[in-house]
Amino acid sequence: MRPSFQPRLINDPFSDPGLYIPFLYEKRTLLFDFGQLHSLSTRDLLKITHVFVTHTHMDHFIGFDTLLRVFLGREKELHIFGPSGFFAHVEGKLAGYTWNLVFEYETNFILKVTEVYPEKTLTRIYVCKDRFEPQGQQIEEPFAGILWEEPSFYVEGAILDHRIPCLGLSLVENFYVNIIKEGLKELGLQVGPWLNRFKKALYEKKDPSDEFRVTWEKGGTVIDERKFVLGELANKIASISPGRKVTYITDVIGSPENYEKVINLANKADYLFIEAAFLDRDKDIAQKKYHLTAREAGELARMSDVKHYTLFHFSPRYTDMAEEIEKEAREAAKKQGSEDS
Ligand SMILES: [Zn+2]
Ligand SMILES: [Zn+2]
Image (cartoon, helix red, strand yellow):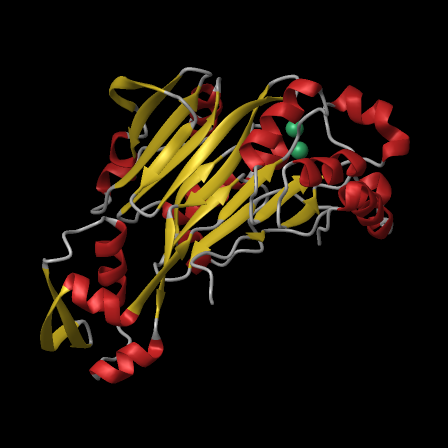
């Protein structure tokens, strides 16, 4: 069975962090962290709708400019999230360029920015045409762990300690709709854009007695259609399975407080992406720099009971020693009989 999203790191583990999470059945992507984005094509970048930034150290935030450059002059909305102080960093970047010509664009690019605090979020809206001046009043909302929610998934955040606040992130899919090919065949239906509409109707928990139209399209125009009852169609062509969870943890000290928060956030994740900046023999440096060691990363994978984990954000001091880092984490992950890959 194909998963509905397929997370991948944007760079090798010695380069800037970032996790690109495309949704296979929609032309859209979430991004965790803004490291250098040069490995992504303009096409890949244009699919990004939401970016969650753990913190604004340069290696996690430099890609903001690349994305802004690609979005400029297009009809787009981009929503980015970051920890306290985020507005100042975004506004500082925006202030770095001259915007005297943007009012001439026929398209509108809107940038939404949300700053995350332990118990609230603040959101400001910047409109390209208005030279990215913040619009109106900032919006304050209570925050209890959920940063963003849609019918099919939500993104959870925890504020971790990197000597500065740093967000830990989980993408949690509510459930997964799998399309049964034989069911389509039996009904004489073809795969097409209507399947996205169909899945959306299920994710939005539409009334099963609602009418649903399966359409045949040519060049974006509907050329034929058949009417079904949503629930009856779902019984024939869809199977529902539990959704997946992806957790992303980077730039955190291995303190008891962080351990507790990470284990909560990553609990039973299908995929854990976790930094392993240092080897255990350099733990004193890791502690000074507020980073995890490979041993701690493996330990956290085991304690969070995740299915798979992937290490990244290795310190350049270990160039050519990636295997040693992997081995250290693997041993820590396997202790007490647990199996991880
Ligand atoms: Zn950092
Ligand atoms: Zn970093």
